[in-house]
Amino acid sequence: MIKPEHPPLEAGVDRPASTGQIILEYARTIITVAIVVTFVRTFLFESFVIPSGSMIPSLQVGDYIWVSKYSYGYSKYALPFSPNLFEGRIWGSEPHRGDVAVFRFTKDTSIDYVKRVVGLPGDRIRVTQGHLFLNGEQVPCVDVHPYTAIDESHVAMEGEACQETLPGSGGHAPVQHAILKLMDDGQQNNTPEYVVPPGYFFAMGDNRDDSADSRFMGDGPKDLGFVPQQNLVGKAQIVFFSTDATAPFWQFWHWPAEIRWGRLFRGVS
Image (cartoon, rainbow, N blue to C red; front, side, top):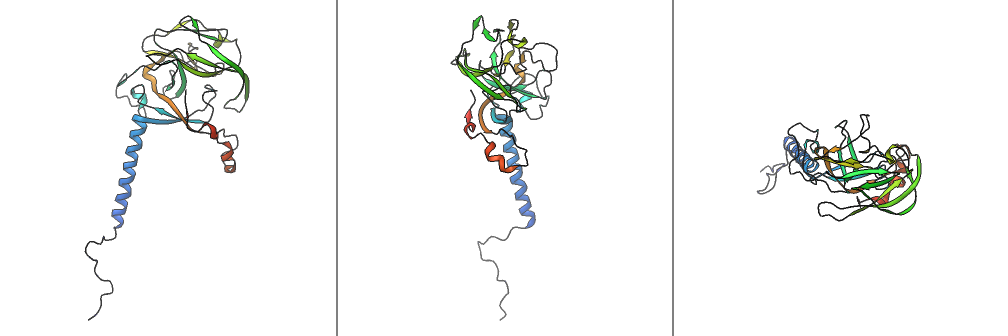
């Protein structure tokens, strides 16, 4: 009897997958991952990188942050590519005073901005000689100390930082956070009193003298004005990565030294 060169497969032993089956399995895995990522990015969290120094010292240039998309409900700006499917917000909720929020720029809604929510509908806001006043009361800022900031052009800015305390809203506790002051004069430090209209909020950068924010109400290309709540994208929650990127990108041997290890997984407040 001639012995078979390859004996038949035993019962219960899997046959090798064909090339078509392998390709199909890879495609199924990729599609599943894409669906999960799209769902998370659309409804739960999205990552952003901080490109400018307008939120120093709370956020540094080169910080990567997670933004919760569910915090304020969903408008078309919370969706990928901002499809014009509906107006307003679904499950919308008002931001809280002191939140660090990501929203679409009022002059060009293709641009994302990150600022602190300082005023809500009905609030009266003004800045006089560099001091913030909310509803007729000066907002306290204590523990004044020297601070050197590095902006997106790697230029050092000498100023003073302090701990500002914004009154809470919606039953939330007051919010304490750091701000940076470089000067006490200029348009940004002496404003009229603004009253926030319904459906809008007033946003300011923590770097008070290097921020194009709601204090600027004109028709200039960088004037923010009051921000419609529909423009909200989400609330900044965590700095998950941070780099100062001082060396050219191709000099990979500098990468470990450029990482701000102390800022990783720091909460945004």
